[in-house]
Structure formats: structure tokens, C-alpha cells
Length: 282
Image (cartoon, rainbow, N blue to C red; front, side):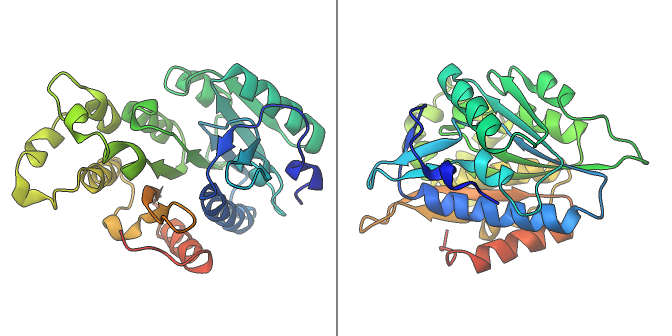
């Protein structure tokens, strides 16, 4: 159960976030709970991995409310995971996260990796036990970048190759990708190449018959197709959840995407979308 102190200002780092973060956390927490509870008798070890863990708490810009971040939400589940691994590159955020985990959840099995997830992927994988047929492990990896440039496809591919894993990912469709098509489509820019782990997208983007002229949605779909090449289920943009700016502005911000090799995982994600805030059209 989540400690009431998780919503208090403890004087440590409090990154400022938009009110829409509550919706993201709602979906992340709901799915994590489904995952952890349903899998606890099917797997010997359930691992929660977060690549952009933050400080453990945040402050909502519009209301000044202090809210627990995704690491604390995952730690506070009624059926907690067996092991947690949090990666964070900002030193102040990492120090705050370590303090908060020790204060609120001292009994949890937690490992911390300080650094950029793309540079520390080997260390991240070493923090997770080597599973076998007699000691089976299942991982849920939450990937929450602010910009496309913060995560490389090869990092996702390395984690997928080393673990039996489901991914819940933020794709910064509108708050980053859609805003900067002129920059990202320049020959000199390799940001999309790195994000998708391929240069093949350029020929498809340059052929207007193959997309709807929305660069954000185009890249989101390209990413989904790349995940499908790794063996993850992907049926199209309809399985992505659009998150919009809170309040009257209602502007689109990003998509939450779920990738699993299991039909059950995809069914859980669709239940999450139905049981939390009503899904938005992409």
C-alpha cells in the first residue's frame, strides 16, 4: 500500500510536471497492478524496470500538488514486484529517489543504476537475475522519455534480447516529434535513425502515398513496426493511447504504447485503456 508520505513535500527534489501526468500514472499503475497480481503464481520472479525513473515524486505545475512518481506507485502496489531496478541519469533526482525508497519501502528489493540508460544498458541487465527454465523471470519495463533523442532503439532491443519482457512506453508524438519535422528529416540529423534503429523510414516518409502526412503518427507507427520485427505484438495505431493536455486546451501531447509477445499482455493493456480514462482517438 502506498505510504501517505509519498504525497508530501519532504524538501528533496521535486521536478515540475503537467497535470496530464496524472493520467499517465493512472494507466501505468493500473497496468502494473494487473501485471504483478496476475503473474505472481506463474513466474518465479517478477521484475519492474524503469529507465527514466526521476526523483520518485513531482509537483504539478498547475496546482502545486505533490504527487508520487511512477517508482513509488510501482513499489506501493498491493502485490509488489519481487525486484525493482531504477535507472536515472540526474544526480539530484537519483539521490532523492534513493532516499524516498529507503524511507517508504525499506523492505523492497531495489537496485539503482545511475546514468544514461543507453550507456548503462549492460549494467541494467546485470542488475536483473539470470533466469533459467527452473527459475523463470518476467519483466515489465517502463520507458518514459521526454524527447525521442533520449532513447535509442538498440537499447530497447538489447533489453528485449536479454529478458522476457513487456514494455510500456511513452512515444513523444506531439510534444516533440510532430513539432520538429523539418529538423528531424534533415539529412544531417540522425535522431530518428537512432530512435528507430534504421534509416529505412526516410524513403517511406518521402512517399506521401504511404502515410497521412502527420510526422508524429508516422514515426509512432514506424516504431511499432520495428517492435514487431523483434517479435512483439503490434496491430496498429489503434492500440496506442493518446494523452492530451489537461484543462480547456486539450492539445495532444504523446502516446502511451504497450508491447508484449503475449496475447494476455495485450489483453491487459486493452483492459487498462477501458477501465481508466476513456481512450482518445489517435
